[in-house]
Amino acid sequence: MDCQKKIPDSLNPEEHFDIYGYFIWGGKYFTYEIRGKNKIKTELSNFVGKSDFHLVNGTNNSKRIIKLQRNTGEISIIEIQSSEMKLDSFETILKSKQCTFYGNTYQLKRIFANWMDYEIQAHIIETLGFNHEHNVYAFSNAVFSAKGKILKVNDVGIINDQENEKKYYLPAFGLANINNQDYEGERKFLFIEGELDFEKWAKLYFEAFENNGAIATLFLILSVFWDIVFSQVGFFPFLFLFGAYGTGKTKLAEFLLRVFGKDYLGIPLNNATQVGLTRAIASRNNTTFYLKEYTPETDESNQDLILTAYDGSGRVTGIKSNDNKTRIAAVKSAIIFDGNHLPNQKTAILSRMVLLNFQKNQFSKKQQKAFNELEKIQDKGFGKVLTNILKHREYVQQNLKRVFDENVTELKKELNNNNFSERTLKHVALILTPAKLLIKKIKFPFTFNEITLAVVENAIEQNNLLKQTDEITIFWQAFSYGIKNNILTEFKRDLYNNKQSHYNFKINEAGKNILQIKLQSIFPEYVKYCKNNNQRFLDPNSLRMLLTSKANKAFIPNPQKKPGHTYIDKYFSVCYQFWLENNENGFSINEVEINK
Image (cartoon, rainbow, N blue to C red):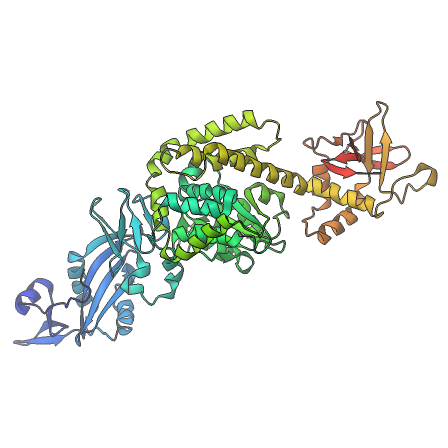
């Protein structure tokens, strides 16, 4: 479409008036009025216009792209809603372009009716990433079609998909929004083809970041098919990049995000509200978001968002309407976090993550060479990497669940001695799924056996961390710390210190070691320990319920026929009892050393 093409005057004003009720002359709208026996030419405007596209958005308030041409020749392209096509609202828009309409509502409706007879229908793509309705992957400047072609926008923002006989509208780069700052974020999510295909990019990425790069590559593939993954397995884990400054966390994320254009800097987690964060993440489908600098001070509402985002939930918001409808801003993309602190305020958060540990800040010559090569060409884009993955969508959709189930079954047989939780096992199986699924479709820089070993070793390391950071373990760590530092007092029968004591070691009739504790008196010291170590502490009731639950195998239920979980010891008084395990240094509970 030639936006600068002039709207011509009516060839036959009389005939045009008879058909449409107006005509164009000198770049203005005119009509005829009958005054007595005279037919008077009456000016209606200082502009003429044309509705080029009717933009369908699935609501009753669709939009249009309209060309306005002042009688002095200046042309403006505007985007308006159907609800604005009434005299008062439209006149406000006109004045912003130094145009005005002198006529009445009926005359304006006649002009609109003629515009609508000749406009072309296009579908607005409002959410970037994968679009289910049209089966395309949308950037702000192009779409990757179902036929595997990149189709780019024209200067109005329209894409012509001839194979599907459809037209799409991407507003970010259209002339109507060229100065609209609301689209700045969308303009960063754009297709930049670049020089590297998937094979060359993945090889450099793996050489630069080794096993962390391999796992991140598989995570990228899964993120592009987020909807398929979630619909078939019911969850999608996060990636957490853990390590000190200068170990490569940020660059690993940035090189990966370059696949999606220029939005690679990430969102500082502690500068974002839950509302803003949710809206940002919900604005794209099947992509990857990077949330930076997770710390112990991260807002609790943002931590809760992380918990709900794991299973695709989101924040419920109201819609301004007459029927009190609500909209769920659901998370439909993968998320990468980074931080120098583990997310151990809530153990449930860490259990929903695949942890990549960055330890070294000295890199081999091979790593440095690959890193420098990626950095040198990153501004040229890595869009071709993404399209190489996207073309396998149909195959992934047909086979992902089968391969995931195969991985789960095989891993259960091979890893039954690693004490993996069911969730961790499924994370390992999912990360390995694209490697097995696409091994004959995409050339990876590693074998399936190599990546399996790397992912399993990574999971073992994370599993050990999980054991160290669950709520019960933190309590026993606080308890052990209290003993070592003489903060807690042991019961000594010969000292008659029953009232001052916190714990007691005893041996039962079968010769087994038992620990007795007075939870209420220990609790304040537990809270102090958590605060000093940036750990989240539980309230007394929650802690008691966890310690005395059936799932806690160390707890000894009350053998006395009395209500509650407490045990009344003849000498030590009311307490809770736990089994102690012997180890080389003394005793342990939940793998935490408890020494006398």
